Amino acid sequence: MVVQPITPIYDISYYRLLNNNLLSRNNIGMAQRLSNKAKAAKSVRDKRYAMTADRRKKKAENQKKRRAAKKRGVNLKGKDYDHKTRKFTSVKNNRGSFGNGTKKERKK
Image 1: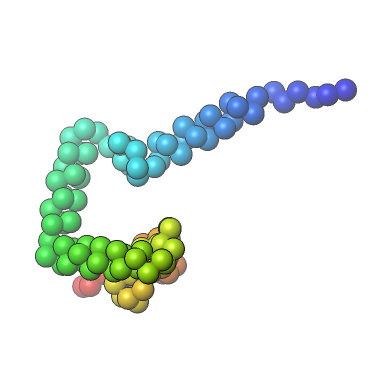
Image 2: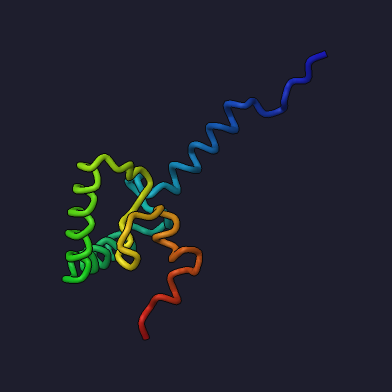
């Protein structure tokens, strides 16, 4: 006797896919569920922060190092350049300060 699952497998994978797409930063939307007014305000804040002198220097340094590493044949999949350690580290470690969180690295 074969027992059929109550919920077909494709339903579960569809909802999982839908959930991943809603939370993805690559999606047109955002990870947070913000109102249109809040999205616009956040976009302005993010753009202003991204265009500061410090962020522009870091972006230029990142691009230069990344291009040079790719030319040397280094596999950079899933890696970001860490400006503190001055080497490529996983995105998870770089954005989470190697498990310490980002609050501790803020200057007071």
